[in-house]
Amino acid sequence: MKRDLVRGGGVGLVVGAFVGCPVSRLYLKDVDSYTVLPLLVMAVAAAVPFGVLLGVWLRITRPLRGALLAVVLLVVLKNAVDLVVPSPSPRLAFAGFVVLAIVSCAGGAVLAGTAALMPRVVAAVVVCGCVVTTATVEQQRTEAFERRLRADTVASYEKSLPLAVPEVVPGRVLVQVWTIGDDVLALDYARGQRSEADVFVRISAGGDPEKACAEWERDFGSCRPATADRWFTKKGANGRQVLFAKVDGRLVEVDSAVLGPDEALVVAGGLRAVSAEYLVDFELPRDGWRRVIVNQ
Image (cartoon, rainbow, N blue to C red):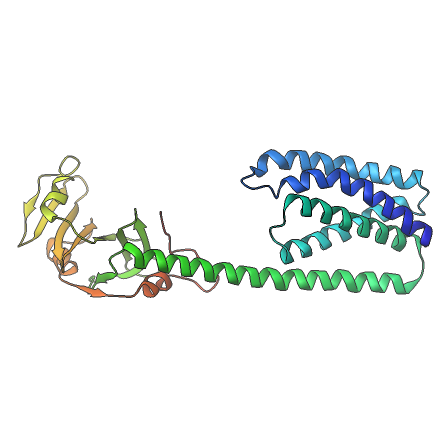
């Protein structure tokens, strides 16, 4: 057992140093991973048979079986360490990988060469512990990432967006929230949560509805006034119309091919203030970020 332990560790030292070089490059700042991954794949493909041959040359008891066990142990241990130490320096990543390779190859050689039950039980317990730890840490990191993402999104909303939504959108519910640039809030409405959006509202902190309407005249039709601070333009081909209105000092655009002029005027009839948390959480599913989109 001691002979296999030492010789397996020697194999791990050589293989770990060989594969550790491309592995460490993955932790460089601003690295393009696609330039490193092919080199890493070739290194792994060459290291496995080389490790087996080295084990045969060193007369490890069962070199092939030991190599297979070493690969399993190395993958499990590396995943566990990556979650605990997510962003090591390249030098630390190289040194850590070499250490893990030594431990994995030595453990694989010992487990493959012994018939004793206790070492195998200990190895199984270690692997199970690493798997459980990996799953737990990964879940915690995912939850922490979602909390940071939510906090960053709330901060970006509070910084420059008009935090308001229409008081009424006839027959529609809000299904998606996003932004245009840094200062325009975009709201998509549909008949139901699973329906396709057909009413689009954009709210800016300020602007002139007549000038905003004039910018659409080239692709639509000429602008015409509806009421005070209300201007329409309509695209005859599909019936799509856009209403531009000044509401509470904000510029509101109601864009739809299904709403009539009167309904569009209802949408632009008034705004109600909402919090940034409301906008961020409104369409935030419990299983992740799928609908709230921030374009910056």
